[in-house]
Image 1 (spheres, rainbow, N blue to C red):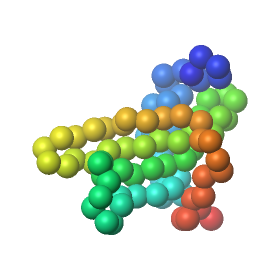
Image 2: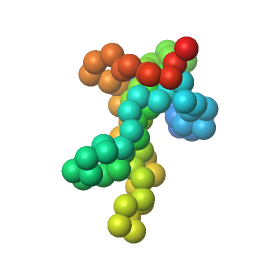
Image 3: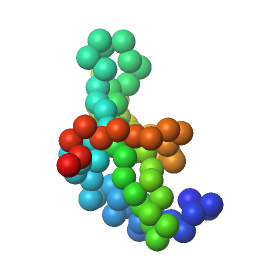
Length: 82
């Protein structure tokens, strides 16, 4: 957040405004993943920086709400985006 014009309110809005249009990928159906992860891509802040948000879902009594948010290293495809 220090490199861009983004504050905590911008991040909160980005998370609260997520829709299926922002969806990137979901849980690995093989069951081999360490975490059950859903990923989204959205823009945030005055600079409309594209970010990648990964959410962990409850598994074996452990719940991780948000464990990654960063600028993507490559273009993010969003299968439900019109």
